[in-house]
Image (cartoon, rainbow, N blue to C red; front, side, top):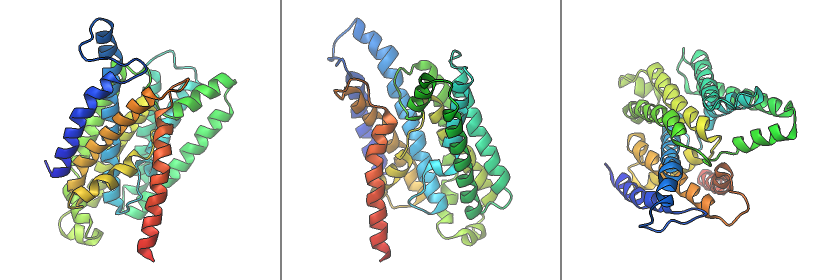
Length: 317
């Protein structure tokens, strides 16, 4: 474990118990009875889900930036998150929400369809340019179809439900969602972990990486599978939570030697920490209704993205 991972692990050890105590109703250490039920059935599964979703998004972001060699790369660029959202919205529109498994299953099906389409379009050549264009096409198509479904909503209530879900949140999540998402995210991170050495070689260029024995087609398939599992499972249970995969690699990169292999674990830990802290903050804000987690992270991520663009522009001048 490198220095960045050790620091982030220590911060997580502090943040997890604090997140369990924080909320509209604060729980003092030592309280029993109702407090135990709140902790075990409401706050603990929500915290575990925040850690899992954040870790998956952080790992996916670090992998994508390493693969595309672009510091502005984000998991949404693959089109997997929009496709997963499309599957979930289709489930809502079809009236399948009475079945608690229908929405996450449809979201994972959407993510799987995007993965298959990515592999079909870009898998033969394994080229980064074609892969990026294919991801942009899938994201655009999924976004257009989602907008179409929203416009066809039969009533304002259905439209409101869809829009609220798309904004992303961990409100009212239980151990059922943890059982759905956590295994898939853990498997996705394990798959992405297998790409770390190849990503290091890829920093020298595609031709140099091939000369070092990197199978670029296998690398592409591993990345599609890993990002599909991490991002798709996260969207399936929490909706769209943006900017995590973009922000956290930049925050932890100065603490590492900047190699993709050294960035993967710290980015997963930083993503888990960011989502956990953000979810704790939205719970304690004095608002009539809880601020959606996706909105809170977007409000933070958009200025960060603008600052990053300005910094890159100054570097090119």
